[in-house]
Image (cartoon, rainbow, N blue to C red):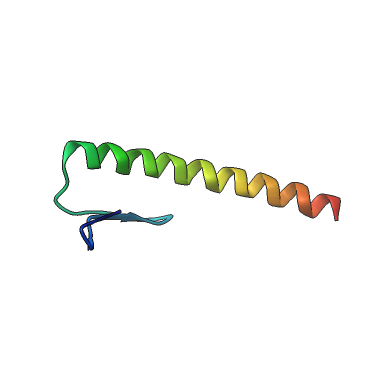
Length: 54
């Protein structure tokens, strides 16, 4: 997450980085975390289905 060319938040599988953020930005970062987790779960299931059908 960037604000005016400055990195204020990021995440990967093991770590979440947060800088000085407002309440709205904190809410967006939390939403971004759960969207990332959903993406990883769906990616796993789709890859498993494709691998089984090939």
